[in-house]
Length: 136
Image 1 (spheres, rainbow, N blue to C red):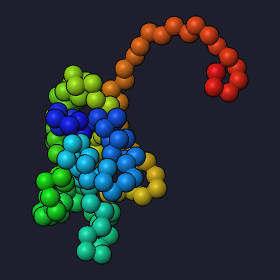
Image 2 (spheres, rainbow, N blue to C red; image 1 turned 30 degrees about the horizontal axis):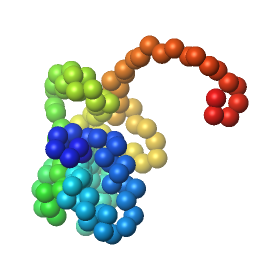
Image 3 (cartoon, helix red, strand yellow; image 1 turned 120 degrees about the vertical axis):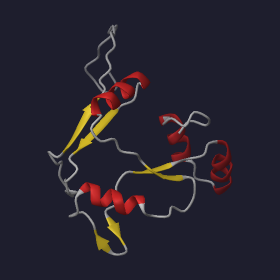
């Protein structure tokens, strides 16, 4: 997330991800804090939860005590997907994922019960040079 906005910031995420030295990581913890948003739970106390419906998994997730304020459960919206998507468009975000409430987690394949709705953005560009080789 951005340092003060609370909004996802890809460059900030990469700055944190690329940090290797312990002192740099400690510094970034203060100046560029990270937030881990949890949107699903697949295992709990050695029990495989993937076969449970989405809403059952979300109930389990909501009941967990998280280790710190740096962790949070991603909210979900029921029945207002169009309004949510309008907010996503306004904020210039990537999109949303619509999920059927009774869907199970299908490992290794894209489920038709989960649909990504992309906020496509377009730009007019002018190509001034074209090269049909590497790095062209």
